[in-house]
Length: 189
Image 1: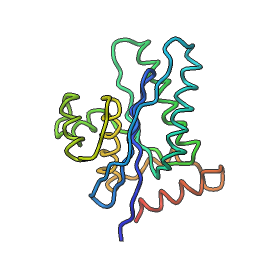
Image 2: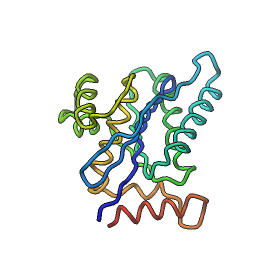
Image 3: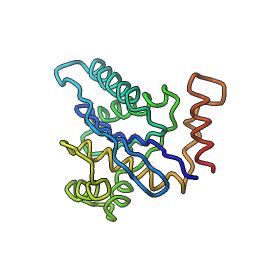
């Protein structure tokens, strides 16, 4: 018997971090919720990161996902922008890790290829395919649609590849260790 797995996708950004929650039961996907966590651009970097941390913590507390997937950093020519995105991405990885959840990471091209069939698909194509795959999905911003696409990618790839066990807490070494061990055991079935 296949059980429901609640997957949270996170599209990291310093200004807006998108999140999307789906349920996967075998190959059947269902939309649960999505949104955006924002930070105030007038605040110093440390306080902006704190806002993202608090926002993502609320999302995890409210929606209780089983697994989390995060988009890998896209490196561009602006080193400062890439560094700031890296900070936001670190928060997106840290919050679920502190909650004891397994975290998978996916390259942007793989997300686009998985959802739209083209690794260089445009945002409009991604949004259309997310809406097609999750007809009940309601998103107002592209960041939330991107996060749902990341969750869909994880649902598609989670059975084919094991989560990177280097990121898992060793058994018995933290409050979330039992939860991680249980999630990894489900993947091995």
